[in-house]
Each structure stands twice: as C-alpha cells, then as structure tokens.
Amino acid sequence: MWIPRFVESRLVRLGQQRPVVVLTGPRQAGKTSLTRRVFPEHGFVTLDLPSEAEQAEREPDRFLARHPPPLVIDEVQYAPGVFRHLKVAVDRERSLNGRFVLTGSQKLELMRATSESLAGRAEIVELEGLSFAELSAVRPDVTPEAMAVRGSLPELWEKPELDARGFHASYLVTYLERDLRSMLAVASLRDFERFIRACAMRSAQLLNKADLARDVGISPSTAADWLSVLEASNQVFILEPWFSNRTKSLSKTPKLYMSDSGLLCHLLSIHSLEELDASPYAGAVWETYVCGELRRQLKNQRRSGELYFWRDRTKEVDFLIHRAGHFELFDAKWTQSPAMRDRAQLVRVRAVLPPNSVRAACVVCRTPHELLLNDDVRALRVHDLAQQGGS
Image (cartoon, rainbow, N blue to C red; front, side, top):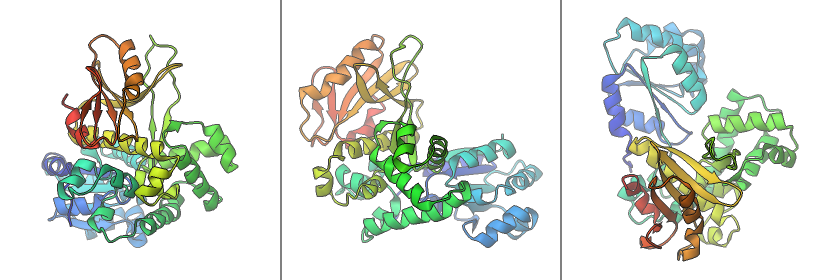
C-alpha cells in the first residue's frame, strides 16, 4: 500500500526547475520509495552497496559513465568524492533540469557537500516520517495515540503485519552498525546504545550534556560528539528556546527530543497503548509525538515560521511557532479531558508577549472534539493541527 506524501508535488516541480534535487531525512523515512515513484524514468543506483560506493568515491568518472543521467543516487553520503564530478556533469548541460536526484540520511554532510560543490545547482528537501494527516488520509481508523506508539516510519503502516518491536530492534542495530561507523569512530557500540537509551529517557527535557555523559560513563566532549551524530542522522531533534535581548530571564538551554516517538517507545520498552497509558513517560512520549507533528506541519505547508519553546523562571510553554512577529503557542497534554488549569501557562505566556501578536494558544491533547477552554485558549486534537497553521 502506497501512502501519498505531501512533498511529492514539490519534488516533481523541483525536478522540472533545478538540475539537482537533494532529498534528506532519517533512514526508513521513505526517501528511496518516494524518489523511485516520483522519478520513474530515472535510472537508480544505491550506494548502500559497498561496491557501488567504492567506485563512486574512487572512480567517479567511470561510475557516472556506468550510470548516466537522469539518475537517482541513493545514500550518496557514502561517496562524498562524487559531488565534484556531479558538478562537472551538470555544468556540461546546465540548461537540463532534473538530471540528478540525490538522497541521504546524514543531513549535515549532505548540506555541506551540496553547498561546497553544487551551490546554485541544487535544491534541498527534508523528508521526515509520516504526518498524521498523511496517514489518516489512507488509514482513517488510526488514532494519534496508536501512531505515537508505533511511530511515523512509513513501512510500519504500509505493512500492518510487521511486528513493530522487531522492526525497531532491527532499525537500531542497522543504525549502530552502518551509519554510526561511517560517521564516528566509537570504541564501544554498547556504550553508544546506552547513550541512545539515556537520550530517550530525557526526551522532552532540557538538555544537560554533563548528566548524559555521567550516566553513560563517558567524557562530556564524547557526549557532545555523539549527540551531534544523532542530530546529524535525524535521530534526535534539538529544540531551541525563544528569547530576545529584551527578555534576559528566558532560558537559553535547548530541549532534547527523539525524532520518532515509535523508536522512543521501543527504547522505553513501551509496546502498546495500554503500556503507554500506564507509563510514567506517557507525557514525555506525547510531547515528543506532538513535536514531530508540528515539525512536519511546518515542512509540509512550506510556510514561513520556526519552532521554539518558551521557558523562564516562572512560565513554560512546550512549543512556540514564530512567524514574522506573530506567535502560535502549544502545550502538549496526555489528558483526554482538558480542564481550565491546563490553559494556565498558555495564558501567562500570552500576557507577556506583545499585544495582538499571539494568533493562537492551544492545548494539544487527546480530546475527542475541539473545545474552547475560554475566549483565548482552545483544546485541539492532533487531527486539527494541519488546519491550525492558517489561523
């Protein structure tokens, strides 16, 4: 079963406008399937195959002669040396668009190589896992709670018979054995897996690298390096706080989130909705899931706007979207029955932002229907977030 992605039409358009299109995102986000579907007439080669990666790196001219454009090169980060030769190939016939489509799961490396060798020739598109809106369009029976536990990786929903526990265990091993070794020299894979689990236990919390390092038994510099690897490979998301020079008391410490709530649940040994509901991590898992939905909403809508959180000495709001001097505020709550007290932090933060600058203040929870908590604050379902951007 194919689940249509909101980014498909954008990829088609960019393929008609730019010589190179670069699609980045975490492993299993659907990059390979998406490019093969959107560009069916292109040739295809994956550098997941060591022999192909070796030739692309050491003999790029011969590699490109064997695989002429139009071409999809999958997991191109395994041969960074090919980028300069792609530039030469593009410049030979600069008027032709859509000649190369590149995918990769190491975002920072792809962006660096693209900016150095393909500047002015390439457009970068980021793909995350499925949004609830994408999934519910073909699976209207799925609830946000079920998606929070199972996660957003497309294969888990395209193949409902897959055991999520086995899928995530395999995903974790593949990531450790494959991506990690190509990005960073790690003396102990066991220590790195413990580090990932320590990150999972701190998802939706303020980031304290010293605590992470101490708990795993590594140096703070190693913890910083490993965290950078997780972020570069789209396994964690670092959310920055909103602050300005006029509000000196605001926190400048970022928050840490696992990028996919399904992998988070697996790392926390949560494998069903019943286990999640009984878990002390339920609130953190829900907040992590809502964080992912807001990120995907911003990317899918392609509206201007950036995601932050608000925290000072007395007030905290989980998520703040800033668009050209206007704000949208969101608090994530696991509750099914939001009460007036759930709006308290939203009201307090709204009061200190500039007059008429807050366009919406919402509690994102498990309510069966959208509710008006008062004139200023609404309780929203995850279903309603896709429409929220236009408010």
